[in-house]
Image (cartoon, rainbow, N blue to C red; front, side):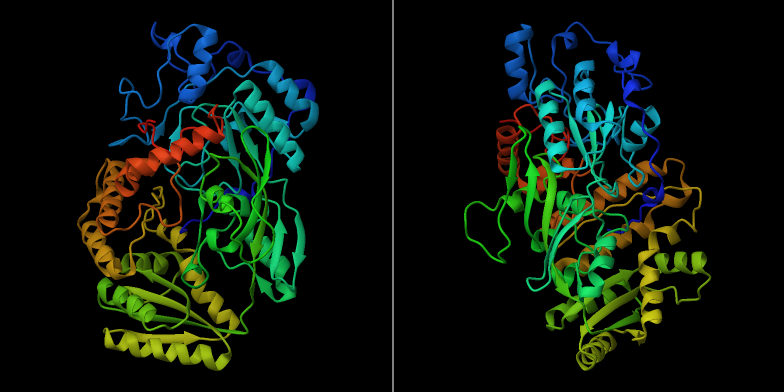
Length: 539
């Protein structure tokens, strides 16, 4: 995940005392401010809010006597965010009235760990690293400190049919934490205990608010580490929800490969544990892998058991320059096919290198550049490095350098880790549009070269309507990856931003199956509604 996340250093605002936990008058009058819903038309006034599933809508119709329209009905606008051919970046929704008795019920067990403060609600409803926005923000933000409190929150939300948006490190990019329908934002940052470390079994049990960086600091004295390294600030719960990976995925896999089991609170309040600590199991459905990547649409993760790795005894970091982006990509492919156990491999094009030079006062050659990391014993790591150097030379590589000293290695990887912020040095008054795709290894060079040609030809940095041009380039890269049997997202997840591509990638039958699972577990559609499953999918 090529992102960093500034707001983690932001101190949490003082929360409102219990006595002030009264709904704003605007909320009580069904017209929230400053993001009011449109005035209802005669037909829309008879409908339930759109965030309710068709099951909940049908059930509610019996009590209200009104007609309902399912999200998948042809009468609705399929061009809103997430629908096929959607081009809008602002997620719209209809807010459900949140009754005061619901707020009072939360206050009975949360105490001061909840807030109705608009600034805090707006902060939680406005992603800091995403170009996706929503017209609404959460009605209330809660900060549970235990699984028991999460369970009570979810049960209250299900009782009153109030939407839930789980919230971790807030490093997600595709609009996962937006609250287009208002509701409750469950901020998991207080649940950050490391519950048990099993050194001999090489696993650890943690709460979802633990950050991966903090976890690795804790594990270091034991000679262990957790091998996934997404953006700084990411937490274990959010990493599970988005099925993230990082630069070490080439050796250790993604989140789905590194979770042994987890606990989650389902929409009806049930707590499910997906397995024990055995490294392998053939017992029953693989529920852990169902919840990993579900992006908060099936439940709230409250505990995770992680697979750990031994800290490598030695590592080597190497860098090599190339004349073309295709030469660099071909070396990455050839290295993988050779069987060399690479720990990391990262590609920076000449534009990114130029940005790094501008931001850090460096004088690196502004050409496509590959970075590698090799781990193992000192002799093994050095042997692998020299083998890759030979591969690079066959593909017109030059200036192959490698370092083994800790400070020198940290300085080289700092170039990659700070690449996003270096990009702002070229256009300080601009924002970044971050995206990701993934293709089979054999199509990597072609995908990168094709995308690079379009990027080089784009007038992105000199036209007025730059956001539309950036979105056009994003569409092109995704379509290119899908045409090569790839995916619209390799690690960032779907959220609201990538829903429109899922039918092309997975097919309508897969999406209907996903919706059936969602409807079975969450018939009231309270869990992160409007995410992951496109709104036009009908069952």
